[in-house]
Length: 168
Image (cartoon, rainbow, N blue to C red):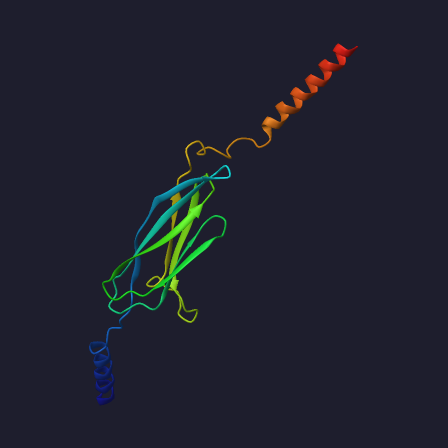
């Protein structure tokens, strides 16, 4: 009986005096973009955007070194590292330039910089940001490719046929 009391007292002490484990809790508050510059170069419209990524730490300890990545459809990646104190909110700004006139989707992710720190729901995450197409390119790429080529070939064949019959 005395043995059971000692074990129960020990378990109760473990349960009652258990210390809470502190941890970071980083989350993505907002992602936005602003067109800052647009110029013409060699028949292309070059657009420069500022991409703002807002992170916050809702946890009760400072975060480990965290990397934020912005990656476009072509695999171009921008990186920034930061740490966040408890309750702190930071805006990380990236300058991103594109000549692609069509709609683009940017993949935005964040997580521990060190490969030795496991990625968890408390310290990592991801989202996407859609950059709108230039006017006139919204539906570009949704038509049958090469369809106009058939009209061109037919017109050339008719022209050759007409020249042969007028020469006879």
